[in-house]
Image (cartoon, rainbow, N blue to C red; front, side):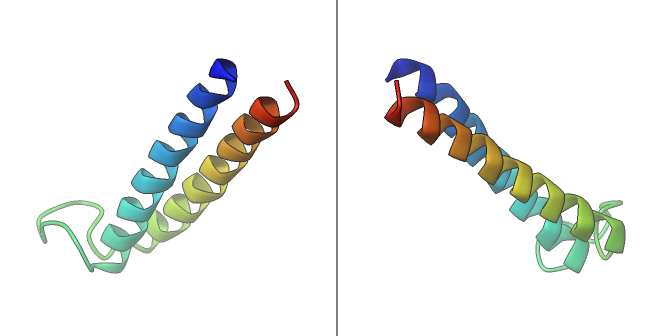
Length: 67
């Protein structure tokens, strides 16, 4: 059970940072002086990080359930 916790927590952190990057790319949060503010590339990067975080968390759930 303990082995599955680490990927779940890491995945949740990745999801959080992906959301922050995506919102900064859209210009909804963050300082206007940031290089990520209104930068369309960071919207894509954020979505990729969110999807990766979901995959890592799902792997952690899989490990904790079937172990």
